Length: 187
Image (cartoon, rainbow, N blue to C red):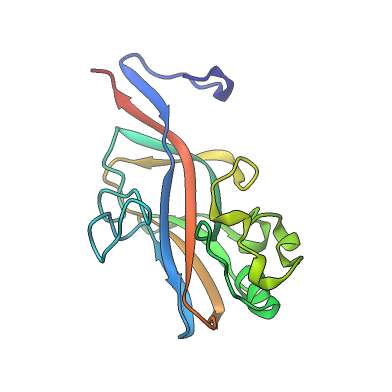
């Protein structure tokens, strides 16, 4: 285990880095919310490229999971085809939140997430903007001041919300990734 996290791991427990990711579609029909991490691999035609959730809205691997960062963007290698105005609505008109059971534990405007450079994502031709290619690069995350703990089998959801509604000219695959440490019993 990397000691740079400064963690004290109880005896008999292993800690390992374990990213979670999920994607959903922004559609041509106006929506106000995308609920992420609700559909596991194998349901609604989701593959491992779309999500790595093995159950609906709960972490089932390990004993618990500490989140330390979050990122969001468009799907890898997807040319968004969004106009500058649409990009501004997606990024500037929405926010992201993490809800564990019924309690919101984090909320922030999408603009503060490093979506490939915050407002700098507006630079260049809109058709070339892929928001850091939608990939979880080390510089494309918002790091929490304190880790957020998810316990095994306790429901959680990450929401991307647009109070005024958002519609895009073509369907766009929007992805959220959260990084953390999974703790599990040593065997």
